[in-house]
Image 1 (cartoon, helix red, strand yellow):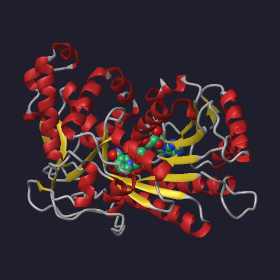
Image 2: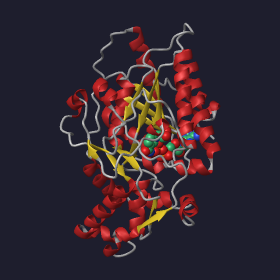
Image 3: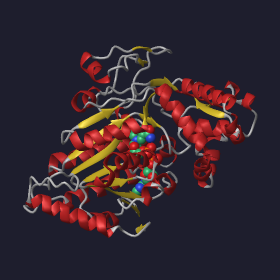
Image 4: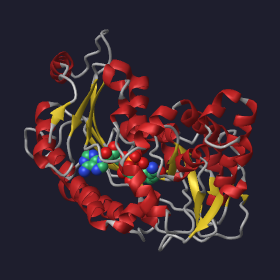
Length: 431
Ligand SMILES: NC(=O)c1ccc[n+]([C@@H]2O[C@H](COP(=O)([O-])OP(=O)(O)OC[C@H]3O[C@@H](n4cnc5c(N)ncnc54)[C@H](O)[C@@H]3O)[C@@H](O)[C@H]2O)c1
């Protein structure tokens, strides 16, 4: 199953090893030829958040980052997402499954991996309801394979401690905390704690649908096969830290939105359906509330935790942007309709005429079983400890996102052909 998409850039691998060895021998070496090169093993790096993270790291660290993307290329992974990144010598792609211990071991054997960033997962709640087993296998057993390899290959020569600078970062979700109450149909002004206010600066006009938030101390109470598989993986990651001393962090984030998201998830699904002149399926009455985080802000938060997070800690990453599903649907309709009216060049993407973009497209469908009502994250810890906050206000992020899908319609066409179409018909045709 394992094969390199392009020949391994031996120069980078060789140089990295020599340089690390040199730095180890001369602990304070400060060469003018550049910083210490760090090697990232990014699992699921051809998926939505993983591919955005690869771009973020490449943009920020340039050739000081060597990135290995390990991805099984399920329906959700697409090499198109990292096409440009793969044209650079410091990014390599390996097609392989995180459940495959042989493949994972061969990567650790070949490269001196510094960071594992474990994005690889089955990530869609609806699919977890139809096929829970796959979620348990990928999300739990796959994570375990990754942990075992890190434990084996990161051991110091004394066999007890771990080599310097290694970290296993598990990308988790706010869904592991379960569901919060929604208090009222409209959001209220959020009173942010003073310590947080210092970090979030100008973003003061924040609203929330309730008074309770998920903090890192909130008990895990997952309610779907997806969220319980992610919670199980989190527990195993922590067990590896407590039992074997493995250097780990866990990040738990809210709903991401942005470029390269597979159009089964709410925002790209809405955009795609509007262009295609299809109905916009909304679960129940669309009352459920999610906190929306721009994917680039998420990548920045992961980078902060990877480099500066305290070992063994969990960090919540949230967008300070709660919105009900129905409001998201209405907002996407409004923005798309406005863009189409003002910028005729996009009209060729529309199957129907502009006037068809209105709220009549909304179609309420039978609710998802066990649908969590509200997720809301309190990101005080990452803000105060690491100076991170979600910089992108939703009004800007959502328009950027919609424009990206309009400008990259070929990408949408390519990933929505074939299997997805079958899945879409099964999910929504008879609801
Ligand atoms: N998207 C969100 O809003 C969100 C929110 C909270 C947490 N998360 C978490 O972030 C991570 C990434 O989410 P995403 O939205 O980018 O997911 P995604 O579904 O877009 O991407 C998942 C990637 O993992 C790959 N993959 C799946 N099974 C694999 C396996 N067995 N071996 C190797 N690769 C495999 C897929 O091919 C795909 O490229 C997941 O762990 C998810 O639980 C996502």
